[in-house]
Structures are given as structure tokens and as C-alpha cells.
Image (tube, rainbow, N blue to C red; front, side, top):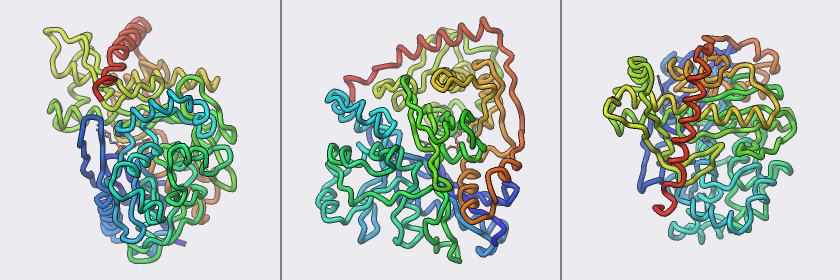
Length: 497
Ligand SMILES: Nc1ncnc2c1ncn2[C@@H]1O[C@H](COP(=O)(O)OP(=O)(O)O)[C@@H](O)[C@H]1O
Ligand SMILES: O=P(O)(O)OC[C@H](O)CO
């Protein structure tokens, strides 16, 4: 048995490799950001070749850093930005187009058409999802319809589709395995989450050939052998990053929830073996397939969280690095009445407005950089508040505290404000890399590296609890004004796209 599990975490802005030991402790990390392409307003793309090269690169780097022999690695777990579409030529192995990223809005009008034609209920009932450009289905259709020659090739069975983990599995196994897992399949808007099969009615509606789709497997189990890191290492875990984080936070029982602050922000609650329907803008999704069973979750998806801090850094040049946002926010008492709604790619849960766009409101003569930075950080807390309220209502489970993780959870200001606004404690674990950890756990359970979930629960350790300290008057005023700001952001790009 190997001593470690390797987790490959293919995120939206960077790829990481983290090597974990049996206690769930990090032994080695390597990370690399990759290029974001914005070819038109509202469009977002990645280069699949760059995703691949950076992912393999960080894998090698993490091994070399602690001079590990590949034999020491028991298994690989993969986790990934979800919904993002990669399509490639089966014969040459080359992508037929850039990856269309989950944030991309190019298919909004087609989604409007699907809604106008009355498909909302059918899609929700089968897939658990709300019709939106966010999901893979309409992005796949866009490539088939708009990239020259791709539909003909696909009709000849020469094109494959995958979300990012599927692309990586195919490459890692030297083109032998074309597979995905239940959690990722459930984000495509093509997968029936009840029958656990690709849905022919939706495939016909969107004119997507079944031959391009990967085989769907449990999230914990044998996917294939990776032959890139020296030895053949089995890939035994794969899950979408948000579901992997739910697993990494050990939210194994119904009612347990976590919130991940990465590029976006995703609040997921385990609902056990029962798919819970949402009436108020949450998604029903598959959490994971494990031990011959499927676990479901309710999800509130917020499209922009940490990405707004990258915007402050890269576009607005208000901060030199993400950590500086905390210092700046703490230099002022409040935002001086300023609100930022970071609806750069529309608004997800609970608003689902494809045409909302970013707004800065309430600027007066005294508003300075610190206020704008603080308002941007606060917008993350407010968005999570909105989703949390719906989650509590629909699950009938008032949250006693919120478990958090992800890159932006390093920011103490965000987490204190979060505790203040939801009026409940916020718990940050020692290891905030729970996405990678979840993928490692799924991989390690499949090989017996970890015996069971109880053994894994023993690895949990708290770093800090943020306690609510805001007056109810201030909280209520902030929430009210935030909702007013959201109204101004909604619908902005309706006649612009
Ligand atoms: N100290 C910080 N304060 C606020 N945001 C941060 C901080 N450190 C990182 N971030 C944000 O976290 C995000 C990266 O988190 P990560 O979990 O790696 O996301 P992803 O998997 O989506 O790429 C970035 O958007 C970055 O702006
Ligand atoms: O890259 P992240 O961590 O913000 O996650 C992206 C989500 O998977 C999109 O659904």
C-alpha cells in the first residue's frame, strides 16, 4: 500500500496538486494559474491544452518537491471546475475548440428560447437544474452548431465531450478511458438524476449525439491507470469540486452543509439518498456515488466571489494581491453607503438572472478605494446570506453554524462579515483545501487506504470560529440596502447581448 494519495484539483483559475497522508494532512502542494480568455463581453474560455499541461506540471512538481517516489502514491483523486465543456477529436486527441467555461453567457438567448417553449419543468424534473447558460448542455450545442466541421465529425463518432475531469482522465490514461462520475454528469443538464442515465429526450431536443458522451461511474471506484507520473497509478476518485468539498468537510449525513469561497461561492447541503426539489432557485444535484449508492445535495450557486477580488486586482488595480483587500477593508468603519453587486456573469442562486451585470451603487463624494474594496468583500457575505435563507427554508434545517473553505476563506474580514450577516458562527477548518481533500478521500476509500467514513471524520480539525458581533439594526439595514442594489443590477444586459 502507498503512503499517500495524490489529489489533482483542476479549478477555474488554477490547477493544483496536493499530496495527502492518512491523517488528511498536506505533505506537498504545487499550483499554477492558467490563462483566462474573454473573447467577447460575457464570454469565458480556457485552453484545454494549457489545462492539461499545467495539471501534469503541478503533479510532477508536487512529487519532486518532497522527492517522492511515484510508488509511494496509492491512488489519484481528481476534482474539477464543473460544467465547463471540453470537446476533442477522438483520433488526433486535439481539442476542437477552446473549453467553454461555466461562467460563459454565450448561450443565454438559446436558454431563453427553451424557457419560452415550456421546457423548464421537464428539465428541472429530470436534471434537478434550472435552465441556464451555466450548465454544459447548451455549450456543447453551441460548439456543434458553430464550429466548422464539428457536427459532421461528431455524427461520424469522431468527437468526444467531457467536463474537465473527463478530459484529464482521458489524457492521463493515454486515451484509453472516456469517463465521468455522477456528480459531474449531474451538472451537464443532460443527465437524469433519478434514472442515473443520459436522457435521450433532452439529447434529442438539443440535437446532441449520444456517442460524444462519457461513461458515467461512481465517484469512488476504479477509473483507469494514469501513466504520466513515472509509474502506473490508479485513478480511483473523481468528483466536481463543490461536491468534493462537501465530502472533504465530512458532510456525510443529511442536513450537513458547507460553503466554499473560490472563484464563485457554492453552498451545498447533503440531503441523503433523497433528491429534494427546490421551489426557490436552488439546484438538486448528485453529491457523489459511493458504495453502490447515490447521495444527493441541494445547492446554491453564486457565480462570483473570489473572482471579484481578482477583478479588484487585475482590472481595477485597487489591490496588489488578494490579501491586501482584507487590510483595506479594515481601514474603514463601513462602506459609506456604497454597494457592489458583482454580477459580472449574471446572477445565479437565488435570482437566476442571466442578464444581471455588475454595478457599483451609492457612490458619494467621500467614497474612496477602501470603501469600494470593503463593499466588494461584503457583497460575498450578502450573496451567501441570500442563498442560506432559501436553503434553511427549503430543507427545514436552520443552520447552527456554517462550515467554510476555499481560497477566499483565508480572508478574516469576509468570514467575520459572513458571521455578522447570517447571525451565526462560521467555522474554518485547519485544512481549507477541502476540495482536494474530498477527492483524495473518495480515491482512498476505493482502495482501502481509509477504511470508512468514520475513520475520515477523525481527521477534522477546526482552525477558527468567527462569532457574530453585529447589531441587528445594522444587519437589517445592510440586507435591505443590498436587496435594493441587486434590483438595479438585474436585467441590465437584456437588450445588449
Ligand atoms: N486572502 C484572500 N482574500 C480574498 N480572496 C482571496 C484570498 N486569497 C485568495 N482569494 C481568492 O480565492 C480565489 C481562489 O480560490 P480557489 O479556492 O483556489 O478557487 P478556484 O478553485 O475557483 O480557482 C481567487 O478568486 C482569489 O481571488
Ligand atoms: O472553481 P471554483 O472552485 O469556483 O468552482 C467552480 C464550480 O465548480 C462551478 O460550478
